[in-house]
Length: 327
Image (cartoon, rainbow, N blue to C red; front, side):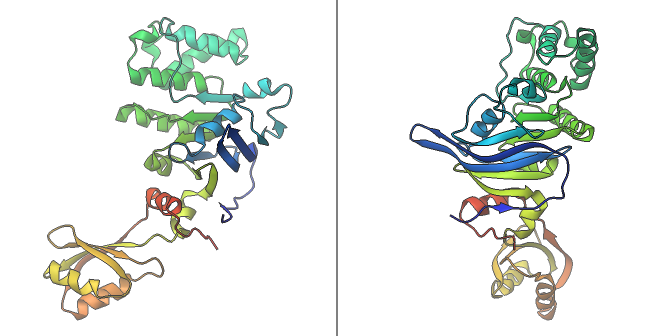
C-alpha cells in the first residue's frame, strides 16, 4: 500500500487533531490509520463514498464510538479522557438525519440545546433570537417541528449546532434536501463561522460543494486516507489529463481527425458547430503545439482555452488506482 499524501500547510492554531484512528466492527475494519488536523478558521471536507469511514470518524470525534486505536485531541486535550464531555460542549454538530421531537416548538428546542451547551440563563433568550435570525426562522419560533418543511427542519438542525458559537463545527451532509436558497444560506453560515474562527469539518459526498466551500479535503476510501491537503494542490498534481476547448474556423470533423493523429492527444469530441473538446495526456502544456498544428493545416482559431480539472476527476483518479504522487 502506497503512503498517503499529506500536503504540509502553514502552521496555525490547531483546534482538532485526529491521529492514527483504527476501528473494527467484528470482522469489518472500518478505519485504517486515519489522521488529519483542523485549524482555526479552516473549512475541511471529509470526502468518500458510502462505506469509506466518514461516519465512523465523525462518531469517534463526537465521543459516540471508541476507536480500537488512535486518539482525538481538542485544543490539545485528549477527548476520551475524563472531562471529555466538557470538551464536547465546544463542538457544534449537525447530523445528516435530524432527530428533533415532532411535538416540540422551534424556540423551545433551541432553549434546551442552549442549556445543554452550558449557556448562562440570562444569555439564552438572546442566543435563540440571534440564531433564528441567522437561519431565517424568526417567524417560526412558535411552530412545532411537525409543522416545518424538510428544508426548515434542516435549518433548525443547523441552528442548534451554531447557537453556542462552537470552536469546532461538524456538519454531516449539511446541504441534503435543501433548495437553492437554503443551500446558499448554509454556505453563507459556513463562511461566517469560519471567519469567526470556528474550525469546520464538513462530511459530504457532494464533490462540487466541497470544491466551492472548503479550503482542504481529506479523502477516505475503504477506511484509509487517500489524500489530505488543499483542493487546488490535489487537482494540480494528481496527473489528470488536460482538457482543451478549441473553436475552429473550418471543417471541425477534419480538424478532429488531424488532432487525433498527435501522440499526446487521447481523444477529440465535436461538441458544437465548430467546437472541439480535446483530451490530452497528463504532462506539459500542449496548447501552443495544438494551435500551430491547426494553423499550419489552414484552420483559423476563434478560441482556445483550458478546462480546469475538477475535484471529482481527481477523486476518481485516486480511487481507481491512478498515480497520486505530489513530488
